[in-house]
View 1 (cartoon, rainbow, N blue to C red):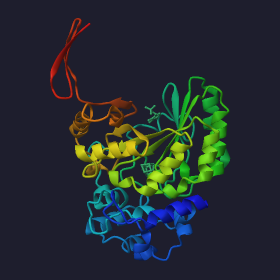
View 2 (view 1 turned 90 degrees about the vertical axis):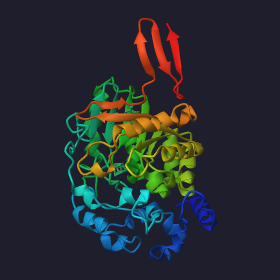
View 3 (view 1 turned 135 degrees about the vertical axis):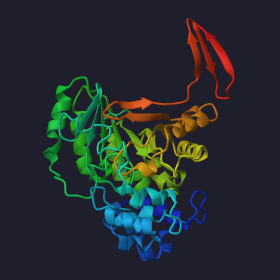
View 4 (view 1 turned 30 degrees about the vertical axis):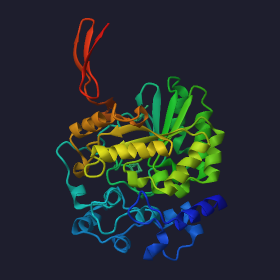
Length: 391
Ligand SMILES: *Cc1c(COP(=O)(O)O)cnc(C)c1O
Ligand code: SF4
C-alpha cells in the first residue's frame, strides 16, 4: 500500500466539492463503511474481498426495487453479482434509474432472451485457435487473461465466460496461446483483456507481458480494463512502474457515463498517463444510461480532461439477456452526428457494430456522401450544407 495513494485519497475525502457526482463520495458517510480505515479503503485487495455479493448486503446500501430483487434471484447463472465498495458509494440508493446502479445491479429483464440474442454473438469461441485466445484479424489477437473482473457489468458481452467461478490459475494455462502467437509471424498486435487482466496480481501480469514481449514480431501490446473505473485503487505505483518497464504499452478503459469520472478515477488515470501509457476509452451504448447525445458528449469531454482519448462506442452486442440495454442503431448514428464537427475531433470516437457471427468491428456513422458520380462527389458537412468535390 503506498503512502502517496493514502494521502491522495484522504485529501479527496476531505474535499467537499462534488462537482461531478450528486452524492458525496465520502464513504465514511455510508453507514456500512463508516468505520473502515482509509488504509483498508485504499487497498485493492480489501476492496475485492469486501465486494457486495448478495441481496442482503446490497439492501444495506440501496433501497431495492421488486425488479431488482427478482433479478438478483435469477442472476445465479454465470455472470455473478459483484460490486466493489468504491462503486457502491457512487450508486444512488433511491434512484433505480441511476446509471451506475443499472450497470451493476441485475434486474428481472436479464432473464428475458430477445429474438436475435446469442450466448456468443461475436463467435469468439469459434475463432479460438488455442485456449484463452481469439484470432479474428490477420495481424492481431485477443488474449483472455482471466475470467474475473472487479465488478460485473450487467451488459457484459462475455457473460458466457466471466464471473466468480473457480478457474485454473496455473501459469501454464497460456502456453498454447503463446506458442500460437510465436508460430504466427503475422501477429504484430496482442490485446490482453478478459475478464479484467488487472484483477490478477502484478507478478502474473508481468509474467504474461514478458512472454509476449519476448516474441520479436509482436510490436504492439495493449491491455483492456475497467479497473480505473470500478476499482481505481488497483492502479498502484508498483503496478504502474512494472508496466512502465515494458513501454510502449497502451491501455483501453471501459467508460460508460460521466459520473464514472470521479476524482479518484482521475488519480488512477493520471498515474498511468504520467508513466507514458496512452489511454483510450471504449463505451457501450446503453439505453437509458448514455443514449442521449448530451450525455455522450459530456462523457467524451470529461475523458479528454483526464487524458483519455475516446476510441470506440460499441453498439450493445446481442448477448442473451441484454435486450433492455439495447438501443436502435439510429440512436448511435445520431450521437456521432451530434459530435462530429460540433466538438473537438479528439472527442469523437468510432461507433462500431461487432458483426454478429464473427465479422469484427464494423464502423457505422452518418452518411456525408450525398451522391457520387465519375470524378464528382456531392458531400454535406456537419451543418447540412452541400459541397461538391471534383476529382
Ligand atoms: C476488438 C478486437 C480486436 C482489436 O480491434 P482494434 O480495432 O484493433 O482495436 C482484436 N481482436 C478481437 C477478437 C477483437 O474483438
Ligand atoms: S469489466 Fe468488461 S469483461 Fe468484466 S463484466 Fe464488465 S464488460 Fe464484462
